[in-house]
Every structure is written in C-alpha cells, then in structure tokens.
Image (cartoon, rainbow, N blue to C red; front, top):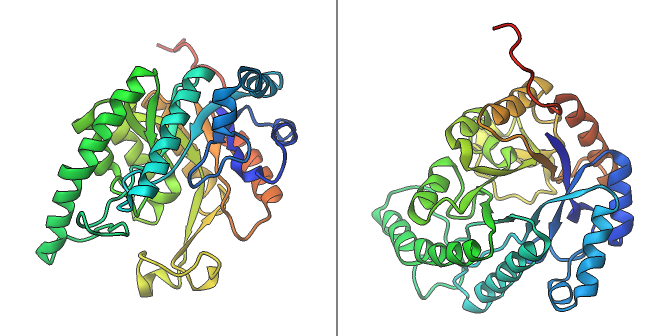
Length: 320
C-alpha cells in the first residue's frame, strides 16, 4: 500500500511547491482536483487538454519527483436540477475523463449527484425516509428517470476512454452507502466503483470494515479521513446535523485527522480488510480537520498511516 494525498489541501501553493512539500513529508501518490467542488488550482483542464507542452510539463512535474497520480477528482453534482449547473459539472467530468486518458490514469473520483424531487425543482432533494409515501415516490422517480439513465451514458463515455468512475458514497447524494453504490453498479456496470471514504460511513452508523468486506472488488480508490462522533451531542440529537462545521462543540460529529476519531486498532483492521479483498493501493489523505492546521493535520496523518499500512508484498506461507 502507498500513502497519498488529495492535493487540493495545498491549493494555495503552486503545483511544484506543493509536490515538493508532500514528497518531503513521505507521500508517494497525489490525487489531483480538476474542478467542480474541489477546484482546479493545480490542474486547468482547458490548458492541459489544449496544449501538449503544458500537459507534458504537468506530467513531468509529478513523475520527476517519483510520485504517481492515484486519481483525478472532479466531485460535483451532474444531476443538479438546475440544468446550467448540472451541465457545467458534466462538462468538467467529461474533460477530467479525457485528461485521465491522456495521463494514463484510470481512475476519476466524483459524486453520484442528486436531482430534485421533480422536473420543476431548482434544488437537490436527498430523501432519508420512506414515509409519507411522497418520499418513496421521489426516490423511485429520481433513480428511474434521472440517476440510472445519466450514469448509463457516463459509463459508456468512460469505457470509451479507458477510465473507471469512482463514486464517493456521501450523504446528500443518491449514492451514500453500500446498498446504493451496489444498486447503481448493478444497473450500469462495473465501470462504476467506490472511492471509499470511511469518514462518511462512521457518522451514518456504518462499520467501514464490514463495508469493505461487502464491497470487495468494487473498491477502486480509498480516502484516509476520520470522524469523531460527539459523545455529548449525538445521544441527544442523533447523527443528522445541519449545523455549520465551524460550530464544532455543538455538532453531533466532526471530521478529524486519521487517528483522532478512531484508534490505531481500527485503522490496522481497516487496511487489513482492504488487503483481504484485494485492494493493495493508495490511501489518499483528505484533511478536513477544523481543530488542526493544514500542516499539522497532514503531517500527523502521514506519520500515523506509516505505522498502519502494509507496504511489502504478502509473505510466502512457509509454515504450511
């Protein structure tokens, strides 16, 4: 396994300076933001797709530092009920897939998106319960009329350009857990897999170890991010929480640097489960810990993961 980082964490720095910094810290792979919600500070799609010299310079900056690109990321909502916004997100997604092909990167990370409740809505509608019956009707309409038709077309586009789409299960979008990821994968094919981020599983009450075992070969990329469930607020208010992330002391949960939400024992079990199901690849640090600086949170994550990842190939079973 290798330690990676979602490089948008250092979007205030020029690309080469950011690469030098993460390399010195011990990172072996970078996940590059290409637009939509992550922004495109280090990767201007139009420039790189339109200028071969700039493309080679971009590629060279990464490879000369002996880094690899674990994935290109364009997390957005291409199913947004506002067609202009959905169109922009879809365009970025397509260009990201095209760039991935040019860079010989076979993974693009994004979200599944979420439509409205009908064709006349202007905001997404994420349904969290089946009753009153209106909610069940909304979910049925979303999947049959929007989600499956859209992703069926996107899968064909991605397959044409030799790219796998790694959807990050995330509340607020139609793919948010194990069941919904597998539902979409069954409907549109194995070009769709998971960018698995345990932080989004924790606060929904899921067990990431069991999720890994259930998803198995459908795991295409992994984020290393933790969540701390607040022991005071959660028993009173539950896990559904719309308070701003900045109000840490009032929230039911907050994102943490790996090791500050769950122990070393959990993370050792997590990476072992990944290896059991055949994922022996990059753990990409996504730092969103509001209690730590970027520098401290990132460096603590690298040090922590170095202790828990399994780096060498499996041993021959000499004892059998």
